[in-house]
Length: 256
Image (cartoon, rainbow, N blue to C red; front, side):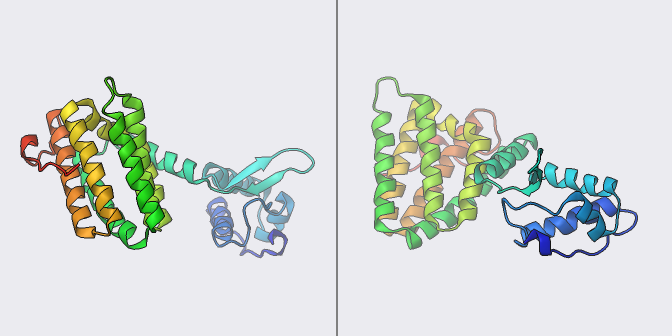
């Protein structure tokens, strides 16, 4: 509990940073749990053997990191926040956008991650999850048969398929990263749906990939993943990028 915590006196010269780091460690280690309050400002001054200004500097640093929230009133104080997955993914997505990442680097990273996720999904996903993934791909296929496909819905369904596949890996870190990548760079996937031929190839490839996952065929599923990234690289190259591999007409058609 927060009232049984013990800390070292703050280091001279960088007292605010040292106090913040010690409190952060207590939060990360679980010695102060989400929803619990930190000791009072006066108690922290006594514990760290420092002044009010140093404690307030540390509180601002922790608040900026999203680790605590300051509540006012009779029952106020500094309380540990539960870091939400959605907010963490949004923050990472925003960071990636601001870096102006070269599309080639992103495609390389995504393909590497997708290959690992696919292998884990085949090994760890249960039959129900695999059938559900395939059904969602069939819904995507049905949508592109409409006279005027809803592009926004197409991209959203594609995004959800990627996230569902990441969830099947059984590793939450892959899901968090996938959400961040999807939020940060959905425009790259959108490019595949803008062109009718690429749209057809992309959806056929999704069908083939989900069928091979459902059939517990990891190598065939990986082959489909490879075809997807040939499509993506060539589409981005056509739109002005530098990630082409071969002509789009040379891409093997998925058995959709």
